[in-house]
Length: 287
Image (cartoon, rainbow, N blue to C red):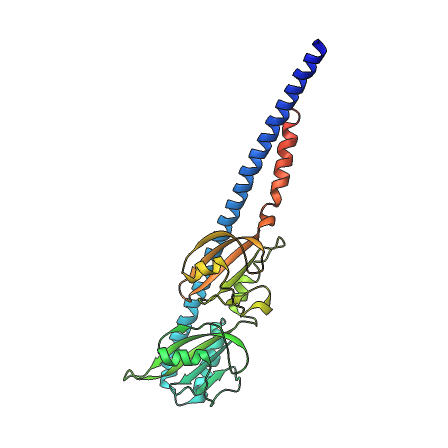
């Protein structure tokens, strides 16, 4: 009888200790998992905000570079050679444009730098038509130019002394070639699968580590939908590829673009197993 009682007492004590340890580890697992997710979301949000601020500063600099030579361009609208020299100098000093052009109010290209073979031709591309219609400073959505390149146009209007519209000064960014966006963002790719991408105001990819995806529409992505509503924040989602990710996102007011920094869900929780194992090993001697 004593032996049986001792057995049940020891069994009860052992069960109680194991239950206490298990509940402690499980509670720690839940709390640590939640903390890791929240930290990853916060880091991605802060990171996307930082990158969006950098990108916005570059856009402001690009537009300022165009504005700085606007008067020189206006004074030489009828001299394509002088205009070409101005554009050559601006292209070297600006560094962020892939090409520059001056287009008259009739849509005919007057000068370009570098020479892409369109000077003297009427340009009917989406971006040029938009700039001619609006007659204001714009940053277009991505489109295919007459050269076949996927690009974004940064344009400022040109008005003469009588305030008559005489054309536009344009800078272009070739999205599938080396450009300032890649210079800022390309290095932000980690071995854990984290990466950054950029979308325009219509949900089209402007930058992505996989270049063949640039120009793809991803407006179904919930984070992209928030960016299209000019929102900042972070969210746990399944992206358009069905991947479970933790994403931070930030809206760029200057261009209407959005920057998304995302980390695979599983990668964010990689430290979790190690943390729980250490807690178990630390508790084991006391148990």
